Length: 481
Ligand code: GLY
Ligand code: MN
Image 1 (cartoon, protein in one colour):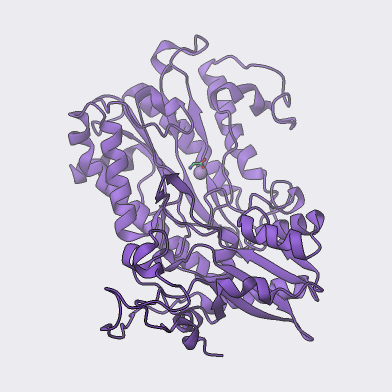
Image 2 (tube, helix red, strand yellow; image 1 turned 60 degrees about the vertical axis):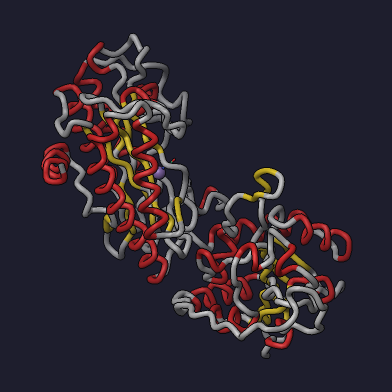
């Protein structure tokens, strides 16, 4: 059904905006993932027969006064619509309405702002959040329908469209007005909503071919950004807040080649590398130190990479830095070798930590605590958790820490399947004030992180084009400087 008439300006209202507007064409590239998103909606339909499913995109969040943070739709919404970057419209709501044989699908979204009045009054020029004079041209409803292959209707019609006698599940907490509407008019069921959220998270565990293509795009752009950073290292050493220069260099490439960042860039020089999520990035970058750069470009499709390299700022590792880097590199290789379909999810972490534990033991570093005390596992590697702290990876996709709402048995306590995409990122962090380690190691932090897809018989490293081993890193850096 065409909704073109719902976008059309209606009445003239006089004043400076009346009349004189030409039709404007919006030339958009086709949304290549639409057919894949349709399959995901079919899976939702099959899982919840006879029930209405409501998945809001979420809306704008105020930064201050009349400024908002940039809009980024909820990942479950993106997964089911294949909505793209700048085209995403705040306050959209995807509704799967039960029919005799399945569900009909409608995207309730904001139509264009009419230039000279009509149903949306003066929105075009007077509404800073949504008026096109302020925020730019949106798709018409029919352009949205064509792009995504989903019937589109005005968001303002949502209230009327939701008949009260249909059991309804909502992805709760994303759109307060939708939650309130359902609470007031329908029969809310917190348990049913939680089950929906969990299902939508688990639906993202296995990536299809299109998603893997998007992750490749994100990874390739991230690799280009790492190249940019190496080219700027010398300049960064001359600045009081060189970490910020590194962050800005990475982020510029992310905005150029993708939608932005999958998470705030971690640009940690010197002992800041021992802070797992150092995002303040307000320190200097010194000749002789390491720079730990943990960053990911989010593609226009909202899929993100997540890659870490720990680089010698002057292009050459010191002996102590190289020793730590080599051990982390060996641990990462052991973790990667444990990736295969059918393997326990935790196996790659255990394999990486075993290498770390053996290495630290050989260096004579003291174990701490009791096996299993920290993680609940019985691994001897726990004895070195003082220097490793966190897990060695996570699922990756639309979110950096993807599928976080999945049940233990399908994720952390489950087994790997072909199509899972995950990071392997062991690290060693010797705090600058840790008297249990030799002085030359204090203040050294190293993490190495790559992105892997599980294949039919093993795994494939999506980020293998970025140099990883110490020799490789030095050769690569020399070639760029
Ligand atoms: N790249 C940040 C993290 O995985 O926590
Ligand atoms: Mn990570």
